[in-house]
Length: 124
Image (cartoon, rainbow, N blue to C red):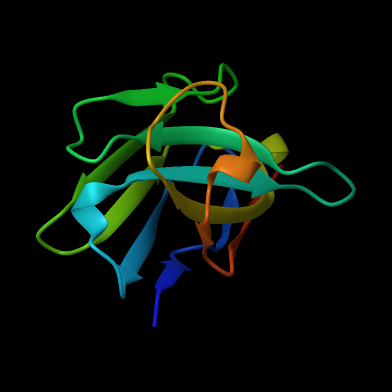
């Protein structure tokens, strides 16, 4: 069964940090790019960052540049999102998804596998 499972979401104070994980199974993880999207209540799902199959190429939304960092460990079939200097506006459900390439801007329709999401809440 093809799966992406996110974990690591939590309630954190503004200025704090979290690391999200995206564990993959059921497909050849190191053949695919991984992206993180987020969706806040009442808003559209937006692309946050992506990383290509080897980890050599990354892209970020302007709103998270310098604060978030995406990485992957192909030996563990897992991607990560390190989030520092968190702000209340980062509050959202965070989803990981796979696609053939890491290109910007991110388009939801190019991502064919999705996790169930993990909640990140940043209090002020």
